[in-house]
Image 1 (spheres, rainbow, N blue to C red):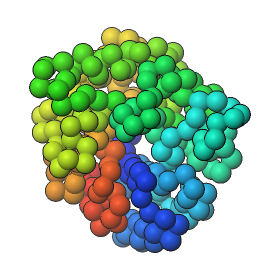
Image 2 (cartoon, rainbow, N blue to C red):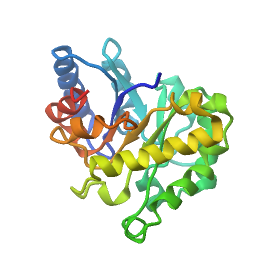
Image 3 (cartoon, one colour):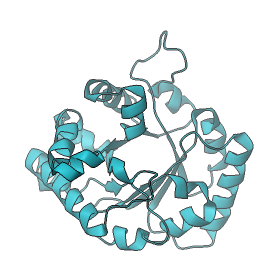
Image 4 (cartoon, rainbow, N blue to C red):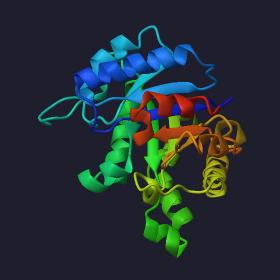
Length: 251
């Protein structure tokens, strides 16, 4: 049985004080509502240790926004999977479109990162999705299939116990544009069909597929109601406790 998940990617936002304030606000807000999903937050790397401590007795889990594929070495500014484990982080976001676009992370690099994360027993939230020109040209299914086949679809079936997929149409990230619930369902159903054809229905039905692209409290319930949409990877709306709580309670 796959999990419903709402994960907040805070990106390069919130200093130490703001991180503490937001987590405290979320802890308080979530104590007062009914929660029917897993809740994750992903602060910037320098605030991961404090975030883990602040959520120790909370329903909130902490994920990292990125990690390097090497175990250690001369990689200035990077953090390894083992370092995440050491501070109590159990999940990591990999393949976000901003990492692909701004930092040149290609399929080979992401395959290496996935392998390192799995070796260190980290859960992976693996991101992928098409650009606006891909959608307009009708190539969006081919692009998504390629991104998956060149990376995670090469893994063995057992690895999928540790992987969550996050479909993020790049044209709907931070733009205010949102794929319609029908468009999200269409792509999510296609993604699940790729899992079925590769691993069989048993694996496919246990993989959570999140939608990432301008999810808000006002549209979350309709998006999450679709059969193959198991939650969201939330950007800007996760930076406000009231908005993020509104999305969480959409389940």
